[in-house]
Amino acid sequence: MSTEIRPIGVFDSGYGGLTVLKEFIDLMPEYDYYYLGDNARAPYGSRSFDAVYNYTLEAVNKLFEMGCELIVLACNTASAKALRTIQQNDLPKIDPQKRVLGVIRPSVEMLGEFTQTNNIGVLGTKGTILSNSYPLETKKFFPEIKVSQEACPMWVSLVENNEFDKAGADYFVKKNIESLLSKNSKIDSIILACTHYPLLIEKIKKYLPANIQLLSQGKIVAESLKDYLKRHPEIENKCTKSGIYKFFTTDSPDVFKEQGQIFCNKITEVEHIEL
Ligand code: DGL
Image 1 (cartoon, rainbow, N blue to C red):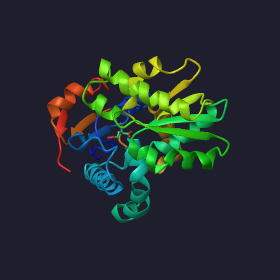
Image 2: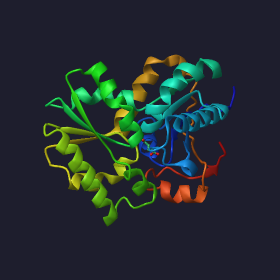
Image 3: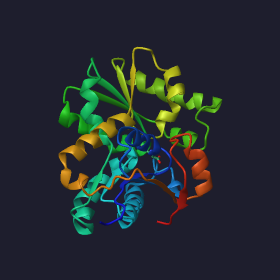
Image 4: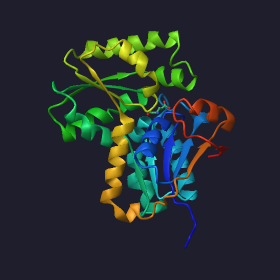
């Protein structure tokens, strides 16, 4: 019997995807997971379409080389700017049997369960918001839901630089939340459409009226992956299940190990990797 590891790859520009991986591990601890953070080039949020696409494709190729059969882009910016092109143009050439999934579609599919007023707010990076992915995807599933959006260009930097619970974060969180709510007074649910934002949740709650519910993606995406694996036994059968979790970063492994603990307490060894 082969002892080769066929892990599920989880990719993000930096630490944010760890909030998604954590939920994968909680829900499906038996699988093997490789996490890759492109910390050396994070944040992606304000980068061009081409840059995000090229960086993401490099990471996807690397994770495939390392044995992954299935990769989840646990990054909204990469899901918004790179996923479709990779699925349609690159995967057929690389290996049509392999799969790359994103976080936007599974999140949007759940929106109808949360809003009573049919008015949703989306907080995301500049890249995600300008791509219009959330309004466009929502229209396909729930044409009756109105989506109002706000780009929060500073939030990922606050998180990546460990400033998310400091006083300086209050200014930007308050400013962006007030701006989002001023766009539509009927919003009753807000989705954190960036995998870094769960770290800011205490600050966000502080400036959000109590009647507005907050949706984080980790749990939603984990449930969706579980369902996907159930519906695709041909993929599921290839994923090995030894409960091995490995972490790779394009920047300093020591810094990743220390900072990453804030996002996910399953980090043991971290390796540096070049893309
Ligand atoms: N975690 C990424 C996301 O979900 C952050 C992108 C960035 O690096 O700016 O969008």
